Length: 99
Image (cartoon, rainbow, N blue to C red):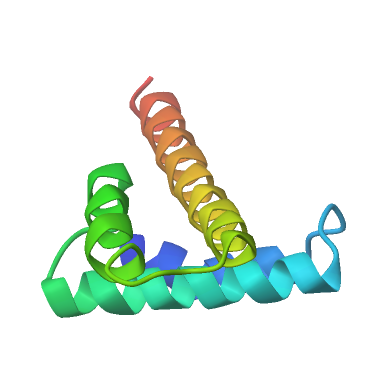
């Protein structure tokens, strides 16, 4: 799977979501962009292991308000679930094409 395509498309998918409020979309966008930028600087793939490292090294390195931690956790979880859904879809598509 080409993660660059996913990284280009997640914001459009988020923006078009009817399930989230404008505020939720804003804090998800903030958290995801921060995570993507940090991952790129560290030269790491955006995945759950990288997210754990990001949480430890970028977020927890200074004191944060509980509302920030809650919102940022929501944003990172949303993004990781999106990545995993897209990966599963790509695997399923590859299997169908091979059949």
